[in-house]
Length: 276
Image (tube, rainbow, N blue to C red; front, side, top):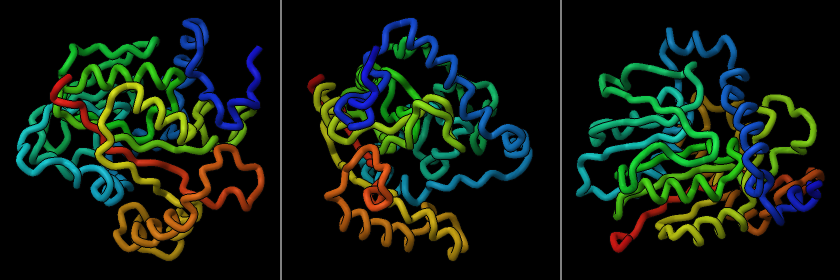
């Protein structure tokens, strides 16, 4: 029996040491978890113009770090659903593959750029040859996966030497996952920052940029702003200041309200050495 207090304390990453039976159970719970949360909104999104609410955030801490001399990317989107995250860079994209467990999000193209959908494997292995992609994005996906270190290793394997991996993930517990949480899937939990750093280092990635972001109170700016906060450059500046002021707080599980004042996520720009 595992002591979940160690996981809530951020000393271990819950799920990363699961056996195959446990991985299969987790996979079944999460494969349609996000789609089930959205419910009827999925069909509505397919029939109307969707609003992707993280473009400014992804540009500021991710896409802006891509080299200007690279004009054509073979891209993999991990858990990218409709693929809307790629719209800011479509003119530089040659091919898009989306690794997505649910059929609910499948579209034929993104602004006329064809999309190929592939199902993930239960054990975390990726169904792609080594050195397949120039760019991989993984925005808010790893925290839905049990064996994070295995998947990060697979992302490294599938990335071409000199390629880039953009990752954005929550670094807080997201509550006590031992019981149901409103608005969250059954299994999702954040990745403790110290463990995330260790996984990235052990895997062999070069860290181009690490940026803690998404301060715990920033989302409340939606009440006074005309656009989603993470599509607003002004809101991002405010968020950056508060994340800097509270950078000392990397507490993982925070039952006390005062401990909740912290950056809630981290954004990584990672690269695979041309020597590998």
